[in-house]
Length: 64
Image (tube, rainbow, N blue to C red):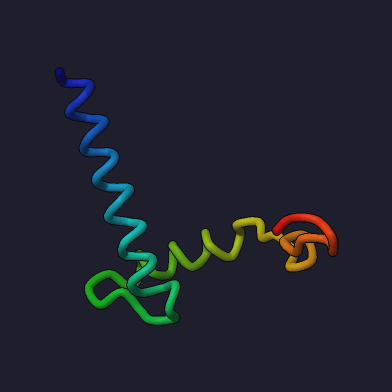
């Protein structure tokens, strides 16, 4: 029971961080009460790998 409770709290914390990132740093704004959190999220987002636009495109004659 304790394990389930701890995992649920962890899930809620991660969900809160994702919502905070989408609401503020992703749009280029500072987090009002915790600017350090916004700065940390921005640093992590800059380090994340990105896909090239060319890799996302479907070649002609394939797909839909």
